[in-house]
Image 1 (cartoon, rainbow, N blue to C red):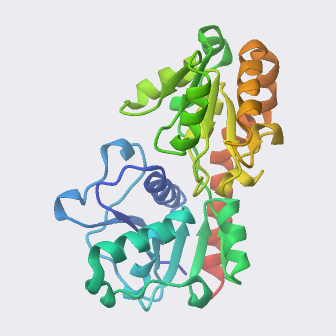
Image 2: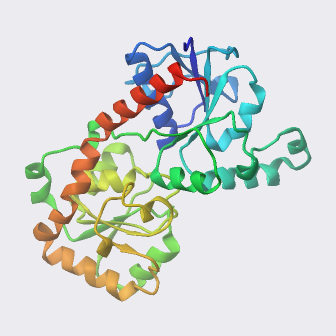
Image 3: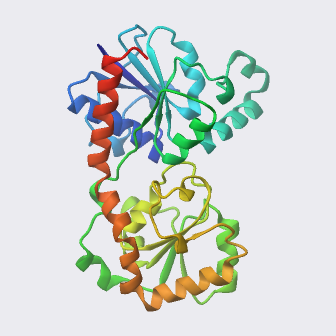
Length: 323
């Protein structure tokens, strides 16, 4: 029997990972569970972010640690599970890469104070812990370390980026959109070799501006590290962009980024001529090549239904079994 579910999240954080935590809380409440967001950090940030007010959220001011409760923490704050000994404890792997990046960051910033914090190590992970995996990348990575009690729970996109093709396709231009925060040293090489192409940086934009940019571009490129099942490639695909990636992280898994192999490059620098040829072919044969992404778009449209099924089945198991 599950009494209460507490989902911990840094206060004031607006990110894809944070939204996934809110989506989980919202669906659990829809299903009749008593699920709460617990925001930690500065007191002034412990409120529901404005961009997540559409979710069915209840906010807890404290976490009740008892055997009938479940406590869920994101992987970047995995050490927080050490503070709860009685509840069922879950690490939600919203990424793999950030698990290591945040540990290194905190060690560098806090130094001696970190002696008071025990970070979980994958090779010595407490077997009583439960693990939710947002991506196939995370699931298979954890499997390699022999970690058990693994469950797949992904996320989904809201309707902002879902528009009929007949409203988008007429406005398409020979533009390539990219996120300069991800793999820019690789994208920069392409920009230098092809300055005649219109390159659109998705930065310092509101949500509506991003939607407008992606509704005009024909190509979205992402040569970043893909720490989890990233949102922007999915948003770009829904806005009828051909998506080109490397094979880092989740991009290497068809389950996470289900696009044809010809749009994925192991070494973007070595493949620069091939990538530029592909971009120009997309510009000239856009209607034809856009069909290569029909499966991806369909899968994205189905992700909320998949998410619902994953949450229901996972929590039915957690309710019935003593893990």
